[in-house]
Amino acid sequence: MKKLLEYFHKLLTETATTFLRYSYAEINWEARMIGLTGPRGVGKTTLILQYIKKNLNPAETLYVTAEDFYFADHKLIDLADAFMKQGGRYLFIDEIHKYKNWAKELKLIYDYYAELHLVFTGSSILDINKGASDLSRRAVMYHMQGLSFREYLQLFHQLTAETYTLEDILTHQVKIPDLKHPLKYFADYLKRGYYPFSLEGDFEIRLQQIINQTLESDIPLFADMNVTTGRKLKQLLAIISKSVPFKPNFSNIATMLSASRNNIADYCLYIEEAGMIAQLRDDTGGIRGLGKVNKIYLDNPNLVYGLAESSPNIGNVRETFFLNQLRVKHTVRASTMADFQIDDMTFEIGEKTKGRKQIQDIEKAYVVKDNIETGFLNTIPLWQFGMTY
Image 1 (cartoon, rainbow, N blue to C red):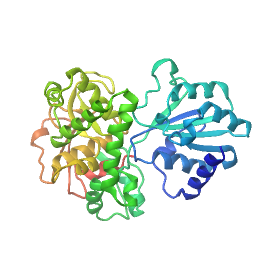
Image 2 (cartoon, rainbow, N blue to C red; image 1 turned 180 degrees about the vertical axis):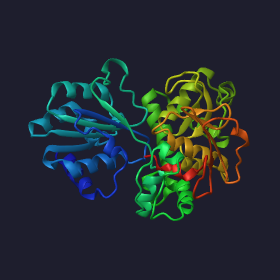
Image 3 (cartoon, helix red, strand yellow; image 1 turned 135 degrees about the vertical axis):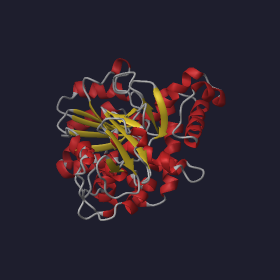
Image 4 (cartoon, one colour; image 1 turned 60 degrees about the vertical axis):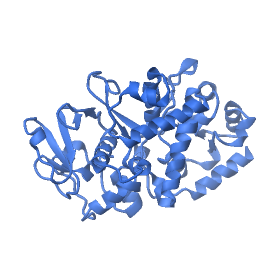
């Protein structure tokens, strides 16, 4: 345990607390067991280290990553036992999906050590409801996605802005005194501003590494896939990336991948939950997350640029941004008359010359325009939808 403590204290010393992600304030840190999921690279590790540094006594706290070689011949529950006997109260476990039988051992730790607070992070595809080790009654789960445009402005350019509700945006309440001309920043955000690690350089290389690790390691490990099936996931993402927004024809995709049609929907769901794509559904299901898949997008604009073999379709980039940013606070559906539907509101996304002809007969319809700084009436600047979280 000595080396684990040394590594933890080294990381804590290197962790800055000047910028906090939106999830920091949303998490109930008093809960006995907290799970934080999200795609690779969005800052989950930094978030929990920041909380420790700002709020906890390091002498009572331990952070470990389940990828550590320590766990090649040690169990989590034994570590928890030894840690408690030394006066430990807060155990943070990063990358929990890398640990075999993680759910079973977390359940036992929760049940056996009532005074121990547990926080774990993992891939978006973690299923806490799976099998006999159901953690749904014990763990309070949170999901974190990449930077909003608002967070990007603060982290990359030290421009602080408050969050705005969708109603604020639609009624032209967005005011950022220090941001005179947002469009130059917005263009950079779309290309490299979604992932915090972009600040560290080598963005394109690191983004490709995240894509490969997600498709070749995280999903196959979770779903018990073999190497061949893992390669099919990469092929599927390549097919989607070349034609987004992609109207899914699972029979055609199955033929292209030499796979069963019944498996394609599962593959798409895994890739979606891992933060690589976003499936836009209609309202036939009536419940969040259900409904027929209408279109498939890449998850965020940075992926659109990262996977494009040539210049990406800017119309697709705009729609991807809108869907990505609004889904954090709202259920975004496909619209039969325009691009998107949120509750009883309809949104058509386009360039600054986009007209209202397509939605002129629809009540509560808005034209969302790129390349404009301010809005008027039912015309809203695209960049402002990045201010909701």
